[in-house]
Length: 319
Image (cartoon, rainbow, N blue to C red; front, side):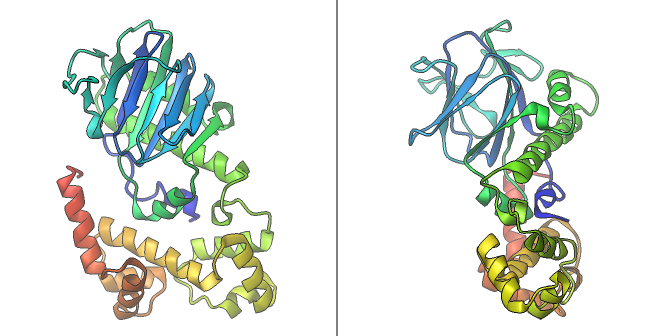
């Protein structure tokens, strides 16, 4: 599995916060939800995102924007517009004065705003957190990213627009899966054509490095060495080491160790496998070997890591 696909192969959207927002002209929202990722899809009218340091992004109809958290930002249609509300974690909404807004801006099923026929209509959906395998990808993503919806492989924007306002059995699951597809489409477009995409996400022209990365991603349990990877790629060890480091930013074995530990972390938290079984799946001959590498990379033992993450999820109300 490649690392882009791995982002959504483990824990996926769970009861995602997804809304259709309808607003009259001249609005501004302060977003402080601390979400890992937010997807914005204008349906009518454009919108802007502006961070406190001045970075700004404009999104038009026919585009999908991704905003990487957790930094706060403003979303608005007109510069200088009066602030309408402040959005806090878990979708809690407050007035600029701090009053909790419960039903004042509700317009129906998963529909929110001050004007159902407003000049600004957009979809917004957030991932509160991401799984461990996706952490490396998220670290490399730009803070903002815009993709032409026409470049997506599936008509998921239209489907999400239709489904987000429905109240049908299992609708939360339907929306979660549509959100997963939308995010995967955006990431695939970015990793394929994005000039700033890292090598391990597909952003390198070096076919040899791409081939070696694919071998690591698809077969992490193999007893890879620099020598065996060089033979696989058909180059010398020196050539492999130099070109891999130039493209990826670290030596092949350092990258492989990080990839294996990320996979192990995901398996430990979301599966019922023993440490011995996890070790075998990610390329370690014994639980001791995995534990030593895991603590070196993560700073805690596998058991401590699993306990901590599961406690955090319980505290956040995750299943």
